Amino acid sequence: MAYTIMVVDDSDTIRAVLERTLIMTRLPVDEIIQAVNGRDALEKLADKWVDIVFTDIHMPEMDGESLVDAMNRDPELADIPVVVVSTEGSTTRIAELRRKGIKGYLRKPFTPEAIRDIIVETLGGWDAKQ
Amino acid sequence: MRNNELTDALALVAARVFEDAAFVFTDRPDEGDLPAEGMWEAGGAAVSFTGTPSGTLHLWAADGFARAAAVNMLGLDEAAGPVDSGADALRELLNIIAGNLLTELYGTEPLFNLGIPQALAARELAADMRHENAVWLAAEGSAVLLTLRIGA
Image (cartoon, rainbow over all chains, first blue to last red; front, side):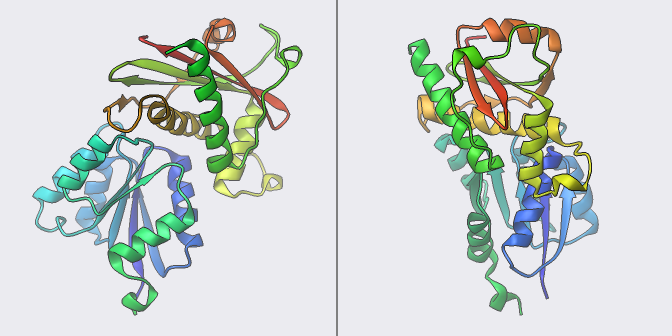
């Protein structure tokens, strides 16, 4: 068994960087699903279960905060851990997102170690997934 | 806040982001090495922010820099073929610089709303090259220009 991970960002570059970084963590990753905004993410989540969602905040059509709200309202999605990956450093914003139940916050630029640590902290590591 | 404090912070944050996110190392060019107006072909991106204060940040770089940044960020082999992601990489680097610059200048307490980075029209380059808050960096054999407008 390995993780299915969703990456939500409107930047092709950041989605590709996150995908590459996830592979570099050497954690057991089965599939990485990409979405370009919150709406795209919700459509894909309707068809596919994922273990964790990494999402940007500022995106066109539906931003990351609205995605978190929509997931919280849906009993099928409310338990999926969400990690916000953003350039923002406002403690006010981060506190608000934490109140909404996000499991972690990573600031861009991020390192493979930070991604790995947050997955292990949230889901458990290789051993937990066996 | 004085202009030189803004531009020093911008230069510091931009250099750090280029290094950490794109593995591109920059330095401050001599004035004689700066491109002449009308002679520099560069692509630009802009991101706005609202809060206290509001403003916009612009980033201009030649295609070679944007391509090199994309290659490094994506871990591509440059010899493998053309890279189409230069403009997207430039917009994302600008986005990261803007977010990090705001906390560098104003701390982590205030709430800013960052816009979505947009491409800039080439006609805006000349005004940016003359702007009082223009910050020049040199990297990958070419120049990079950033301008910060507060209250724009």
